Amino acid sequence: MGRRKFAEVSAPAGPFIVMGVSGCGKSSVASELAARMGGVFLDADDFHPPANKAKMAAGHPLTDEDRWGWLDAINAALRKEVAAGRLVFTACSALRRVYRDRLSVGLPGLRFIYLKGSKELIRERLNHRTNHFMTAALLDSQFATLEEPVDAMTVSIDAPLEAVVDEALRQLNYSAESSR
Image 1 (spheres, helix red, strand yellow):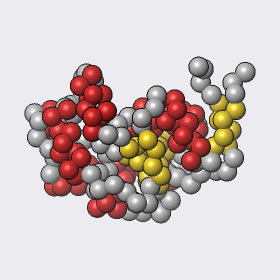
Image 2 (tube, rainbow, N blue to C red):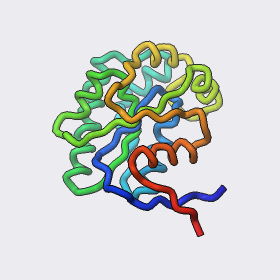
Image 3 (cartoon, helix red, strand yellow):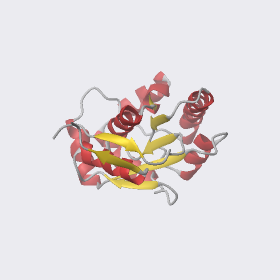
Image 4 (cartoon, one colour):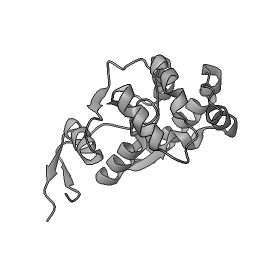
């Protein structure tokens, strides 16, 4: 099945953070949303300092103290993109409400897209992922930390990537047009 084109029905507010536990597909979904909607993609993983990456690669979960500077750096990047008038999609775990609140500072239009899936499905995905500092061993701590958002758009990840992105676009009031 070929890539579908999406026509804007109503301009979505933004910026957007595609959130969820590691392995749920945040980077894939956020980058595809940005591509289809003519936006910019940012990956929160790129904002982790080396010490955070080393800690996670060694199988140790991050503490809140490890996260504050990282979250502030993401917020600053989002604010810069918004100030430049760009539609931006960021892949970021944003597992706790306090993290989402920190990411939202100075961004009244920030919206979250929560990618929801079972621990079993995500563990299987993590076990097949290579060259990433986040290991499947940390999945239990991710689910333990997760405070599911009540004010986010929720999209199930129990489908192929294209269908997940199509559903997110549908919820953002974009409609599919068949490619010719």
